[in-house]
Length: 321
Ligand SMILES: NC(=O)c1ccc[n+]([C@@H]2O[C@H](COP(=O)([O-])OP(=O)(O)OC[C@H]3O[C@@H](n4cnc5c(N)ncnc54)[C@H](OP(=O)(O)O)[C@@H]3O)[C@@H](O)[C@H]2O)c1
Image (cartoon, rainbow, N blue to C red; front, side):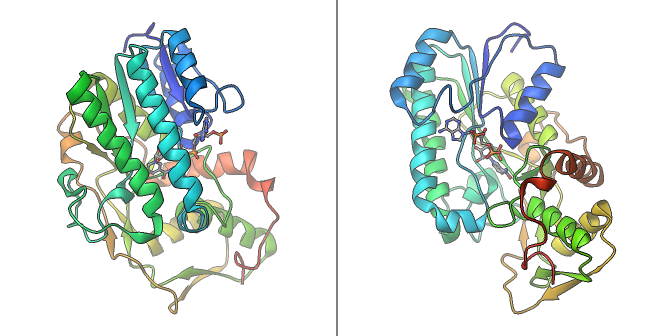
């Protein structure tokens, strides 16, 4: 992509899309195309086709999707499969029809089989039974990956697929009910601090290990892949290391400045002991993350205080005990 390339960032108001927009702007790109949902609903096939026919888009980064944590996936599975199938099918097909040169589609580490060998290599996709809790989301996303691969083979369309790890950063969703684990913890420690609650309770033992990549590093990796990766093989994008949930919680507690203690509710399940992707394929292309977890948490909490802290009622019962 050169500085004048006409690039459509789909989902530019989301966690990943907003970071991609920041990164492209920083890198001097001047011909960026963005549309919010009220201007272009990506589930509307006719509108998406007309958009690509009209706009002369050259590159697409598809960061629009219906995304959420375990609870949201469980409650709104119908929305997750419908919206994701519609968005990705409309955008990938219309982009190809509209003569787009290259498209980046985003999968997720949670598409891999529940018992995939650790660290998870790209070849593990579809090699075993999937995690049931996010099946509608995962099935839709795997269809998107397969569509990219099939369009490449049949039509020569240069569509690539990245598999991000857990992501966090400015622009994330902090609702304790529907958010991912890390922003949910930020919200809970923050609410507990305001409420003067003596302790915050974590589910399980805190020993499971998970990986987290800062959104701006993810954006940087997306640009790197647009410039340096052309293959039908999916490619993992992550930090390359992981952290125990209890250590993550302690880091968040320190970042938030919560003076209370952390306790564990051992009646709650732990989930998988470890979820870490093998990122050797990505690292072999020369890319490395730049933002440490401590720095990323500091920036994310700063953004939360300015933009999201007052967006929800304080100190729910679940947040502080
Ligand atoms: N967050 C993670 O931890 C994570 C991990 C792995 C992979 N990913 C992948 O990364 C991508 C981006 O995720 P994210 O975390 O940035 O999600 P996000 O913060 O929820 O942002 C999604 C964006 O998509 C837009 N969108 C949704 N439905 C739309 C529609 N019908 N028409 C137009 N725009 C629509 C949203 O617009 P509104 O602002 O109007 O809602 C929002 O801007 C997704 O493909 C996701 O699967 C994310």
